[in-house]
Image (cartoon, rainbow, N blue to C red; front, side, top):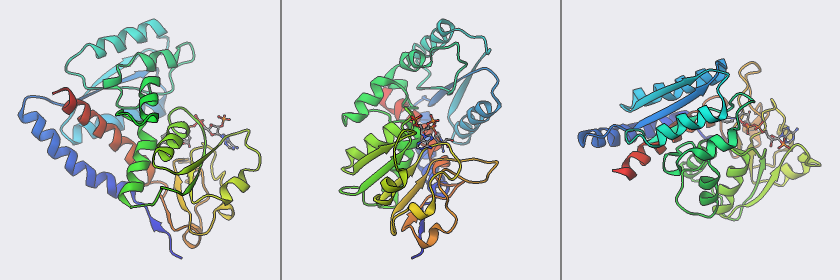
Length: 279
Ligand code: NAP
C-alpha cells in the first residue's frame, strides 16, 4: 500500500486563488476584508504566527490591523481593545493570539470577541453553535483538517475516529466536527489508559498532542487515515511517527505541509466570509 499524501500546502494554494477572486469582488464594492490581530507580549513564536497571518492577508489583497500590547497588559485593558475592534465597522475578523500572559483571563477575553468576528473560532458561543450544527466559524485548525478530508474525499460517516488531545482550540472542536459528520469518535488525553489499544481500532487518527512522535506507527491500523496536527521544528516531526507510514496508512498529512497551511488559510477564508456576511 502506498499512502496518499493529503497535501495541505497545495490545497491552501489552490484555495488562495478563489479567495483572491472573492476579495477583489468585495473591493470593487468598496469593502476590504480586514483582520485585526492582537498580540500581547513579545513571545517570538506568537509574533511569528501573527506575522504569517498578516502576510497571508497582504498576499490576498486583504487588510490587517496589528494591535500590539505590552506583556503587563491587564484583562480589563485587553477587553477594552477587543471591544474597540468589535465596534469598528471596518474590522471583519479578530484574532487574539494564544497564549496570552498568565495574569490575563484568556477565556474571558476570547469570549468578549463578537461571535460574528470570531474568525478563529475561539468563543464558547461559536463552539456551541458549531457543535449543535448551527452556522459558526469553527476553530481554524480542526476546520482546516475537515477541509482537507473533504477535498480528498475521505469517507467519515460510519468510520471510527480517534482524536488524541482535547484542547479547546484543537482536540475538542475536532471531535465535534467529526461527530457532526457521523464518525464514531473517541477522544484521548493525558489520562487515557492504553492509548495504543484505542488507536489500533481507528479508521481515522488525529494527532493533536504537542508531544513529538508520541503516536507510534506500529499502533496505526492498516489502511487508516492519519492526520498529524503537531509540528516540532527542532525534531523535524509532528505528533505521529510518520517514518514508514507509506506502507501502513491509506492516506496521511505530511509534516510540514499538511495541517499548518490549512489553518492559516481557514482563518483568511473565515475573514472573507465575515466580510461577505456583513455586506
Ligand atoms: P495543548 O493545549 O497542549 O493540548 C494537548 C492535548 O494533548 C491535551 O488535551 C493533553 O491532555 C493531551 N496530551 C498530552 N500528553 C498526552 C499523552 N501523553 N497522551 C495522550 N494525550 C496527551 O496543545 P494544542 O494547542 O491542542 O496543540 C496540540 C498540537 O497541535 C501541538 O503539537 C501544536 O503545535 C499543534 N498545533 C498545530 C496547529 C497548526 O496550525 N498546525 C495549530 C494549533 C496546534 P490533557 O487535556 O489531559 O492535558
